[in-house]
Length: 404
Image (cartoon, rainbow, N blue to C red; front, side, top):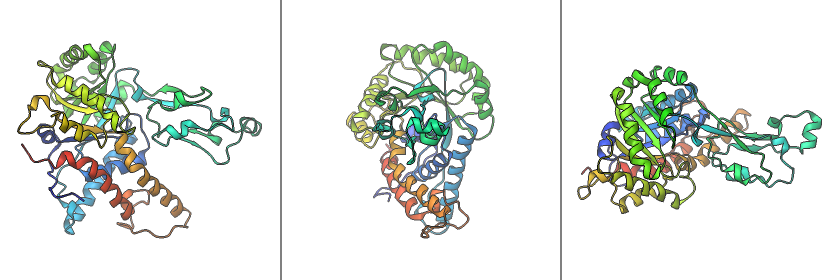
């Protein structure tokens, strides 16, 4: 599973220093706790350094549970002579917050009873999170009205699964889909930071948010002192990029005792689309890395990252090596849509097996332990191993490079 070179397990901060940092993005608005728990389990074993999730207590708890379970599973494997026994480090838990309106912090909404019965439902096809579903017995809007059914009775958006990509909005033939903001208060963020489960925070910002960024950072204040990492996620700001980074760093610096990181979001929420999606983030990273006097902080790419990103970074000389200028290299990469997409079929079969088992009609599947919940990926050994193969193929190119 791991290839010819051994996986070199590093603490997260050392991984940043070595340019081998990998982060899993569960989604700033993705709140399906069962999926978050299983994603955290699989990608912890695959070797990620950080798991970024929504700033909701239940979601943070699910991520922490997945990490704990993975560490315990690996320890058990080690006692039995299994290859996962070398797990010696724990990934950080990061929460994402926003300083204002941001596509990452919204959810699609529509009244499914308004959908004509003959609609081809392009929204359902383009949704990367399987967050739009119509029930098989969905009636026409007239029938729904006559029976007193609500939109929930015919389908619509599964709010916990929607993470705000917005692809459904322009494809709706009747224009009935819109987006609602999904923000957390500063007080909620402070409560989470003081709860003992959060290691890092990421602040998403956009052009024109200078005052809002300053206000958010002021509200966090000394609470940032308990964190291991503070990240700022920003898209391509064009000619304003250099000035904006310096302005934000000046704001943070008085209370910045943790390491800091700049997440360069080249093409937001697009890693699942295809090979070309990674080009924008590579271009952005190359430009920012070339700033001669950029503010302190690690550079990490996101937005359009996928299985083609590693080769693109190599081709552009942006992975640390003995022959490259380390200042022009990135410290790591974050995977969101693509990381979730490759595991979606496996987790979908887990959900199906769980549903069948609930109805006592399933054929028994090999399990790791009878005490485990059937909704946990490790309860179905064949599915777990399949998920690990996929996750490791994505993560390990960054982890197995020889130190330089």
